[in-house]
Image (cartoon, rainbow, N blue to C red):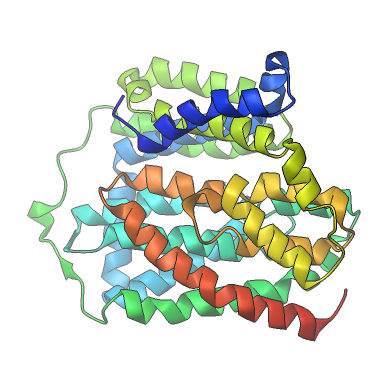
Length: 367
C-alpha cells in the first residue's frame, strides 16, 4: 500500500478524538456507515472489471470521434455527470464517468484528464443537489422532513441551477478551446487483456443487480458476492482494489462521528434558526466534517430544511473533505499534484457560490 497523507492524518487524529469525545470505544463501530463501505467496495470492484476489460477505452475513442474540442468535451462530460448524479447519486456517478475520462488518455494527446476529473467531482456535487436521491444528505433530509419528491425538487432547483451555471462559466478559464489531438489507432492502448471478455460480462451484468441490492440495504453481502465472483473470474483483479480508500472512508466516518459529539461543537450551533445563518452553518461545518455528517448533526437545531440542504450542498465545494465524492474522484484519478488543482477550482467555486446562494435564498423566500 502506497503512503497516503490523508490516511496518516486520520490515523493520528482518531485516538485524539476518542480521548476528547464522550464516546466509549465499544461504540466506535456504530459510527461507521457499513452499508456505504460495502457499496463503495462493490463499485470499486465492478468499475475495475470494466476498466481492465478495455470497454472504457473503446467508449473513450467513440466519444472523441464525435467531440473533438477540449472545452466542448469537458462541458459535455460535466453536463452528463451532473444529470447522472441526480439519478444514481453522486458517488456512483463518479464510478461511471471518472474511469471513462481516465481512459481518454489512451486515445488523446496531452489531454488534461486530471483537471477534467476535478470538474467532474464538482459537477456531481452540483447536479446531485437537485434530487432527493442525488446524495446521502438529500435522501436523509427528504425522508426526515417527510417531503414529496416534487417539493424537494422545487426547493433545490434554484440552487442547483446556480451551481451548474457557475461551474460551466469556469470551464473557459480552465480549459482552452483547442482541438483534441487523437492518437493513431496503432498507438492506442495495449493488446486486449486475456480476461477482457469475462470481465466485461461480469462488470456489465452485475452492475444493476448490485445497485438494487445496495439500495435494499444489502450492500455488504452483495459486495462479498461480487468479491467471490471476481476471484473466480480473475483473481488478480482484487489486488488492484484501492484498500487505502476503504480505510480512509472508515476512519472518516469514525472521526466525523466523534467530532459531531464534542460538547463545545454542539453548543456552538445551538442558536440556529432559519435562512442564511443555517445555510452558512451547513457550509462551514461541511468544511470540517463533510456534508453528510454536517446535515445529520445540524438537523435537530433547525426546521428550515431547504436552508440546511443548500448549505451542505454548497459545502461540498471548498476543501476536499467537504464531500466524500471529492475524495472518491481524487483517489480514482491518482495523479500527483491533483489535490492542489482541485482546491484551486473548488475554493473558487465555493467563494462564488456562497454569496450568490445567500442572495438567492433570501430572494426566493421560504418554501
